[in-house]
Image (cartoon, rainbow, N blue to C red; front, side, top):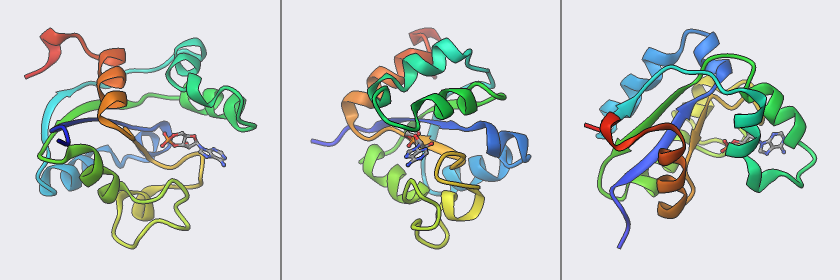
Length: 139
Ligand code: CMP
Protein backbone atom coordinates (compact mmCIF):
# COMPACT_ATOMS: atom_id res chain seq x y z
CA UNK A 1 0.00 0.00 0.00
CA UNK A 2 1.29 3.49 -0.85
CA UNK A 3 2.48 5.54 2.12
CA UNK A 4 0.97 8.82 3.21
CA UNK A 5 4.11 10.92 3.58
CA UNK A 6 6.64 12.39 1.17
CA UNK A 7 9.63 14.68 1.38
CA UNK A 8 10.21 17.84 -0.67
CA UNK A 9 12.56 20.78 -0.78
CA UNK A 10 12.14 24.08 -2.54
CA UNK A 11 15.48 24.61 -4.27
CA UNK A 12 17.81 27.66 -4.29
CA UNK A 13 16.50 29.09 -7.59
CA UNK A 14 12.88 29.20 -6.39
CA UNK A 15 13.72 30.43 -2.88
CA UNK A 16 16.00 33.12 -4.36
CA UNK A 17 13.31 34.24 -6.81
CA UNK A 18 10.83 34.79 -3.97
CA UNK A 19 8.56 31.90 -4.97
CA UNK A 20 8.55 30.03 -1.64
CA UNK A 21 5.12 31.32 -0.58
CA UNK A 22 3.47 30.72 -3.96
CA UNK A 23 4.79 27.15 -4.05
CA UNK A 24 3.68 26.37 -0.49
CA UNK A 25 0.22 27.74 -1.36
CA UNK A 26 -0.02 25.32 -4.32
CA UNK A 27 1.09 22.44 -2.09
CA UNK A 28 -1.53 23.18 0.59
CA UNK A 29 -4.27 23.81 -1.98
CA UNK A 30 -3.50 20.39 -3.48
CA UNK A 31 -4.42 18.83 -0.13
CA UNK A 32 -1.01 18.19 1.43
CA UNK A 33 -0.59 18.83 5.17
CA UNK A 34 2.79 20.25 6.24
CA UNK A 35 4.27 17.97 8.90
CA UNK A 36 7.69 19.68 9.09
CA UNK A 37 9.23 22.75 7.45
CA UNK A 38 12.35 24.89 7.76
CA UNK A 39 14.62 27.27 5.83
CA UNK A 40 18.21 26.07 5.82
CA UNK A 41 21.30 25.75 3.63
CA UNK A 42 23.32 22.72 2.52
CA UNK A 43 27.12 22.71 2.58
CA UNK A 44 28.64 21.16 -0.57
CA UNK A 45 29.45 18.08 1.52
CA UNK A 46 25.84 17.67 2.72
CA UNK A 47 24.46 18.33 -0.79
CA UNK A 48 26.80 15.61 -2.07
CA UNK A 49 25.49 13.19 0.56
CA UNK A 50 21.86 13.97 -0.25
CA UNK A 51 22.41 13.30 -3.96
CA UNK A 52 24.91 10.43 -3.50
CA UNK A 53 22.77 8.18 -5.77
CA UNK A 54 23.69 10.50 -8.67
CA UNK A 55 27.45 10.41 -7.95
CA UNK A 56 28.34 8.81 -11.28
CA UNK A 57 26.16 11.15 -13.36
CA UNK A 58 27.88 13.86 -15.44
CA UNK A 59 25.76 16.56 -13.78
CA UNK A 60 26.64 15.57 -10.18
CA UNK A 61 29.36 18.21 -9.59
CA UNK A 62 27.21 21.06 -10.90
CA UNK A 63 24.19 19.76 -8.97
CA UNK A 64 26.13 19.79 -5.68
CA UNK A 65 27.41 23.32 -6.39
CA UNK A 66 23.92 24.55 -7.26
CA UNK A 67 22.18 22.89 -4.30
CA UNK A 68 24.65 24.50 -1.87
CA UNK A 69 24.48 27.94 -3.55
CA UNK A 70 21.63 29.38 -1.48
CA UNK A 71 18.91 28.63 1.05
CA UNK A 72 16.44 25.79 0.54
CA UNK A 73 13.11 24.98 2.19
CA UNK A 74 12.78 21.26 3.03
CA UNK A 75 9.39 19.88 4.12
CA UNK A 76 7.68 16.66 5.09
CA UNK A 77 4.18 16.44 3.59
CA UNK A 78 1.20 14.24 4.37
CA UNK A 79 -1.64 13.08 2.10
CA UNK A 80 -2.99 9.74 0.91
CA UNK A 81 -0.78 8.38 -1.92
CA UNK A 82 1.69 11.19 -1.11
CA UNK A 83 4.73 10.25 -3.25
CA UNK A 84 2.84 9.77 -6.52
CA UNK A 85 0.40 12.64 -6.03
CA UNK A 86 3.24 15.02 -5.18
CA UNK A 87 5.26 14.03 -8.23
CA UNK A 88 2.19 14.76 -10.35
CA UNK A 89 1.89 18.18 -8.69
CA UNK A 90 5.52 19.13 -9.40
CA UNK A 91 5.75 17.75 -12.96
CA UNK A 92 8.66 16.27 -14.93
CA UNK A 93 12.30 16.90 -13.95
CA UNK A 94 12.85 18.87 -17.16
CA UNK A 95 10.54 21.91 -17.01
CA UNK A 96 10.22 21.83 -20.82
CA UNK A 97 8.48 18.47 -20.39
CA UNK A 98 6.50 19.37 -17.25
CA UNK A 99 2.71 19.45 -17.73
CA UNK A 100 1.10 22.91 -17.77
CA UNK A 101 0.09 24.12 -14.32
CA UNK A 102 2.63 21.98 -12.46
CA UNK A 103 5.07 23.64 -10.03
CA UNK A 104 8.06 23.06 -12.31
CA UNK A 105 6.20 24.31 -15.40
CA UNK A 106 5.40 27.50 -13.50
CA UNK A 107 8.62 28.13 -11.54
CA UNK A 108 11.59 26.04 -12.78
CA UNK A 109 14.41 27.74 -14.68
CA UNK A 110 16.17 24.66 -16.15
CA UNK A 111 16.54 20.89 -15.78
CA UNK A 112 19.03 21.53 -12.94
CA UNK A 113 17.47 24.62 -11.33
CA UNK A 114 14.08 22.95 -11.40
CA UNK A 115 12.50 24.72 -8.39
CA UNK A 116 11.59 21.72 -6.26
CA UNK A 117 12.48 18.14 -5.34
CA UNK A 118 10.04 15.32 -4.62
CA UNK A 119 10.91 11.86 -3.29
CA UNK A 120 10.59 9.07 -5.87
CA UNK A 121 9.52 6.27 -3.47
CA UNK A 122 8.15 5.72 0.04
CA UNK A 123 11.54 4.34 1.04
CA UNK A 124 13.43 7.42 -0.17
CA UNK A 125 10.83 9.70 1.42
CA UNK A 126 11.76 8.22 4.81
CA UNK A 127 15.52 8.44 4.15
CA UNK A 128 15.29 12.05 2.87
CA UNK A 129 12.97 13.15 5.72
CA UNK A 130 15.44 11.75 8.26
CA UNK A 131 18.28 13.64 6.51
CA UNK A 132 16.70 16.98 7.51
CA UNK A 133 14.30 16.46 10.41
CA UNK A 134 14.34 14.81 13.83
CA UNK A 135 11.16 13.17 15.18
CA UNK A 136 10.70 16.19 17.49
CA UNK A 137 10.41 18.55 14.52
CA UNK A 138 7.38 16.71 13.06
CA UNK A 139 3.85 17.82 13.95
P1 CMP B 1 15.69 16.12 -8.41
O1 CMP B 1 14.33 15.60 -8.67
O2 CMP B 1 15.94 16.84 -7.14
O3 CMP B 1 16.73 14.90 -8.52
C1 CMP B 1 18.01 15.00 -9.07
C2 CMP B 1 18.32 16.37 -9.57
O4 CMP B 1 19.42 16.42 -10.46
C3 CMP B 1 17.16 16.88 -10.40
O5 CMP B 1 16.06 17.14 -9.61
C4 CMP B 1 17.81 18.06 -11.10
O6 CMP B 1 17.96 19.18 -10.24
C5 CMP B 1 19.16 17.46 -11.39
N1 CMP B 1 19.22 16.87 -12.74
C6 CMP B 1 18.58 15.77 -13.16
N2 CMP B 1 18.88 15.52 -14.45
C7 CMP B 1 19.74 16.48 -14.82
C8 CMP B 1 20.43 16.77 -16.04
N3 CMP B 1 20.28 16.00 -17.12
N4 CMP B 1 21.24 17.84 -16.05
C9 CMP B 1 21.40 18.60 -14.95
N5 CMP B 1 20.77 18.38 -13.76
C10 CMP B 1 19.94 17.33 -13.71
